[in-house]
Image (cartoon, rainbow, N blue to C red; front, side, top):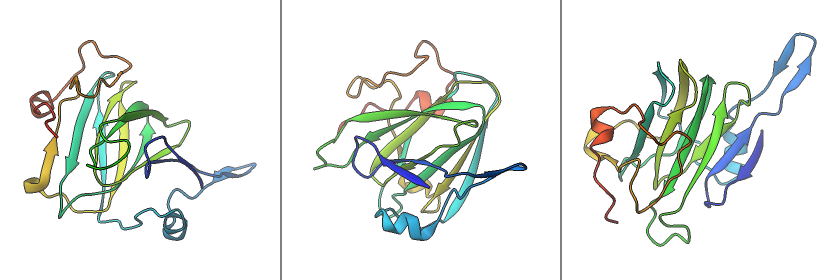
Length: 177
């Protein structure tokens, strides 16, 4: 695997290193030793699959607070997404900054998102499937969210006109630090 740290410290874009032959290829997408060697949390508590029927579906911006703050590793298995994170770690030099990456079934990239980041994505294709590996179990009492269009962050979504949102995501509050 090839690890590229983003401009937000602790967040990585990870590309598989494919070993190819006439049949296709083989590549690792997760390795405890390699994660530990890069200082990343290798713990896995659960894996989740999200399916979105329509392009422009927006899910986010979600996070969990301690004691169930979680790291996430996110891959797009079918279709494409624009995946966004916002640094909500008080005291971080990049506090309230965001970055986004495009994850597709074709590029096979994975986005590693550390604790303390809000996360969300917008689908760029119909019938998109997203696979998450998370370090903590889902804890509804620790779940939090912020609005996808909060002016405090000014995230530039690819299709920001009228995304398809759940009622819950449409009603997250603005961020107040």
